[in-house]
Image (cartoon, rainbow, N blue to C red; front, side, top):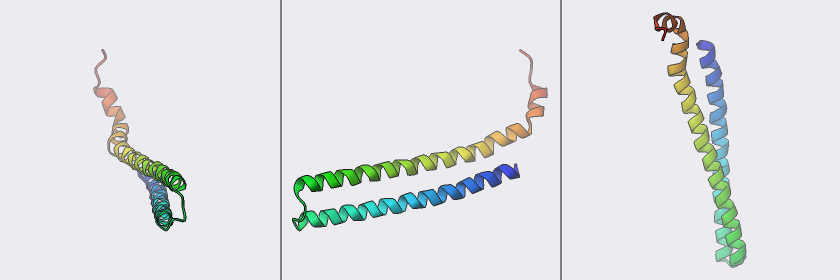
Length: 102
């Protein structure tokens, strides 16, 4: 069980780093979107260009946010596996002996 915890802990560390990277990318995209807004207000961008840029950034931000949600669900799966699956496997012989044949 300790080995599995170590494996999951390592994976959790990798997940945390990946989440941090995704969050930084989201911040950068929002900053770029803000700069596009500034250029649009100062009339350095046409309306069509502005809409295209903002749409592209919004799509990328949404994609990254979905990846963050996906990473959170993976971690919760590991927690469930550790709390429910491993004790069952540890006591498999007892479950096998106590089970009725039907």
